[in-house]
Amino acid sequence: MLMVTRRIGERIVIGEGVEIVITEIHRQSVRVAVKAPPGHVIFRGEVWDKIAQANREAAEAAAQLDAAKMAVIDAIDAPSPARADEGDAPKEPRPAIARPLRGGLKPLVARTTKKTNEP
Image (cartoon, rainbow, N blue to C red; front, top):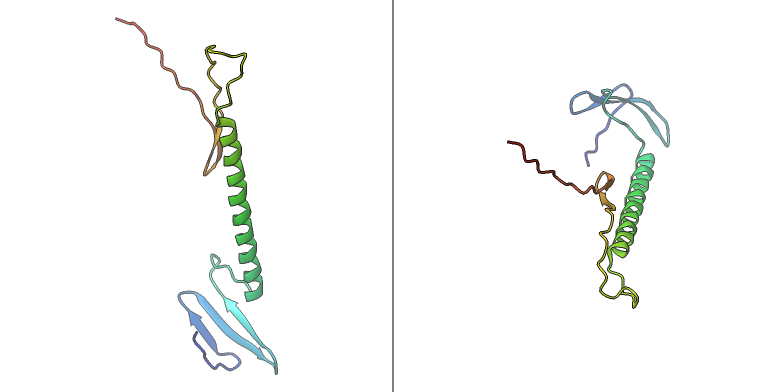
């Protein structure tokens, strides 16, 4: 961490376009002005910490939700025990179900091609 001493009106430049100017000094506080390009976001430290914590909690909740989705899909895909009345009857194909992807759920579509006998 860089420690500097500044007086009222003096400034600190950080990179290109970010400037901190000391505007007031009181016994227990210092007032600063921050100049930055429009693309830079500026937060007080305590606000930034709350945002970071909320982001961590949201990421954990999303991971738990993804795990729950996969458990449901695995339960759907699991082979069911054969019933006594089914015997060796031929099974009908199962319909395609949605699979979780990074961008959300996307339905699986069976692709078939038709062969034509054109000369």
